[in-house]
Length: 127
Image (cartoon, rainbow, N blue to C red; front, side, top):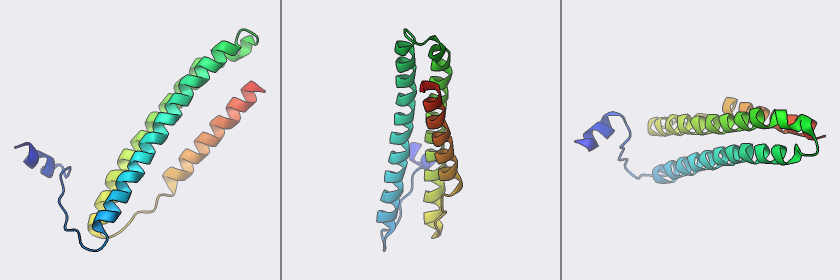
């Protein structure tokens, strides 16, 4: 019964391995795992920034007020990155079944811009 439910939601697929089908789908899974790893790294960086700013607040009081908002923002961006990875994984999987491949331009550009902005903000606060 659960197998039929998973098949109805397209979460359980069995494809014929002709040509590069298996290789393409495994590459898509590795890409999803990279998104998951990146999101975990971004969220961990948020926690580390809170700790760093809290410890350095002993010498510089203005840094403490940025600690929690910046850490929370990093955790939210980490969750957003994971959400982008999940959506992208299912989009690519669906596209590969149809024999096409969607190019990721908007999501990678947006995530890169947001991360660059955060790095600049952190350096402005520190310096």
